Amino acid sequence: MADPTAVVAPLLAVTSAGAAAALLLPAPRGLGPPGEPTDGGTGPHRLGADPAGRTGDGTVLRVVATVAVSAGGLLLVGGAPGAVVSALAGAVTWWLVGRLEPASVRQRRERLVAAVPHAVDLLAACLAAGLSPGAAVEQVVGAIEPPLSEELGAITRRLRLGVDPVTVWRDVAAHPQLGGLGRTVSRATESGASVSEAMLRLAEDQRRRGRAETENRARAVGVKAAVPLGVCLLPAFVLVGVVPLVAGSLSVLLTR
Image (tube, rainbow, N blue to C red):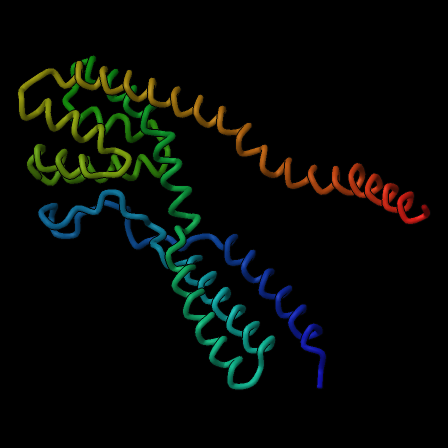
């Protein structure tokens, strides 16, 4: 009978390579821009939808991880117990990997968060020049890059189709990253206040929040670096400093 280790090692190597390849796969593109209404602008709004979806590379990684864990359980345990362990381990792996956030979704969210303050500054400048919120968004769409341009483009398309601006901006207020923009414009539109002044205050708040987040991340670097440094240095310290000292003490005590 073949050595189980000789079988498991190549399997794990191939599985690791497959998992790495799955993580690097480009996400498939959607059939249309996110947020575009499909029923003349009156149906459900899809602002914030991920054009890559949550299947793509996540499904491949999920299948690869489940197959690898199931095969490993079957090979290591073997027999009927191995089949039970394989099934349970595969089910747990399928559930756990399915709960992980796909890399494409995380990257899209991070790019949106980074681009929103700049877009708010541009909107504030356009509004200060006398443009309406809808016209200001149209001008900004051409000056920024995806994915934020796609999200703002969805707003302009709904406004062009004649959807009530109050409804549009209320929908934007529920957006995970553009919620502040939507709430600001919605409140100003409903109350009749100056949208330009409200946008200037939002731009200042965004800049202040961005600086605070940058400082927090900078302070967290030292804390996060302490763990890997400790993991690397502590074994070396024990092997180089403690083990020779203990070995020398034992040798002296045993010779007496």
